[in-house]
Length: 301
Image (cartoon, rainbow, N blue to C red):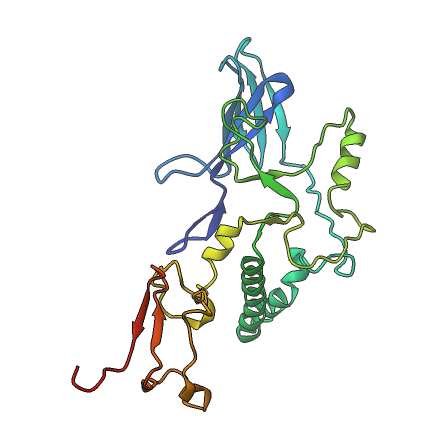
């Protein structure tokens, strides 16, 4: 969408983009361009394009004219030209929507209703507040999905399976595609398939949706742990020295580990015990298992 006449003259909006229509059954593709008016020539609402055989690359038809007026189709094989559609006297068909009571909370018209009402009333403060409520809700839901390891997926769309040999080869420019098979043999059958995707017409209702997505895919455990703060080592240790004996008490040996008499009488554990005459103390190395014996030195030694 382009706007002209912002600085001077009358403001006018223009459509300017490409539209592609593909028919896989007949290997046809239409490349339609909505042209914008040039600075020194051209006209508004111009349209042009081609219809070609997708397999051979041969152009079969040429489109021209105005999308708001008369559009023509030219057969490039025979040169025959005919009117494809004349929008001059055509009556526009206004879209019909279901009432707000029939819509789910996540449908755009209902979700943004309060914001739109405030904008129409030119109440910018209320419009900002209502918009912020929706954005905050979306942020909270996104954070909840991260904490639970849920990868978000659209409710009605899926990623394009493109690439060489893929079922949607040639559609790689699209981010998402409708997650449904519309393969009915008649227009009526296709209409039923479309209406079965999601409520569209009056009288259809949708179930209440909680957190999206409809399809929940759990993230790998490594990705979940990477998004969470690190957990300290067991036992409250701040530093792990990598010892093979951390947290493993040495094996006790009743024949070498003897309890000092003073410790049995209440000497605080962990303090150096005084040596008693005739009572040696033995210590066993926790790694080599060697036993060292300590005795009180005699007078004159």
